Length: 244
Image (cartoon, rainbow, N blue to C red; front, side):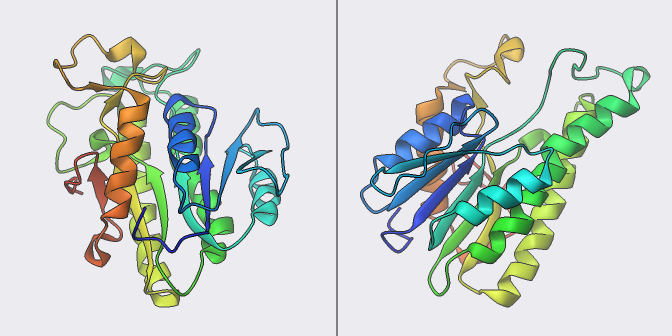
C-alpha cells in the first residue's frame, strides 16, 4: 500500500467472511499499515492499543452499531473496505425468472448490499484522513453492471449491487468536494471460493475460481494503484473498469 501514508488505520467491515478475513490477514502483514480494525457481527471486542488488529462488533442492519463502531476507530483512517454481500440464504435464492420475484427477498438484498454499505459510508467517510490519500471501497459485482448484463436473472442481487454502484458514485462526487485526495470505489473480486459463491461454482472456467488470499492481494493492489480519475468507478480484480 505505497500510495497511502504509513501508520494509518485500515478498516474491514465483514471481517468474518472468507474474503473479509483474507483482507484483514493481508493488511495486518503490511508494515506500512499501522492498525487494522476488523468489524463483523460476531467479533469480540478487542481494543488493545498493543494489538495490531482490533476487533469490534457491527451489524449492517443496525445503524446504531455502525455509529458505535465508528466512534471507536483509531485515527488517522486511511482505508475502509466493506467486504460484505448477500446472494443466497435460507429462504432466499437468486431468481431465474421474474415469476420468482418476492418483495421481502428484494428488500433483504437491498438492505445488505446497498443500504448497509451506505450507512458505513455515512459514519466513516467523515473520519477519512486529510490531507493525503484515503480510500473507501465496497465489494460490488460485475452482475451489478447494467451495460454488461446479457443474461438477466438474479434480479435482487443485480439490482441491489447496481444500487450500491450508484451510491458509490454519489459518494465519490461529494467526497471530492470535501477532500480531493480521498477516493471512493467499488471492487469486483471475481468468483472467489467462499460460501457466497460455492453453490454456483460449477460453471466457472478453469483458473477463474480464486482463493480468498489471492483475491484479497489483487484487490489491495488495485486500491494501491487507483488513479484520481477512477473515483466513483467499479474496478475488477485486474484493475479494469466495469461498465456502469
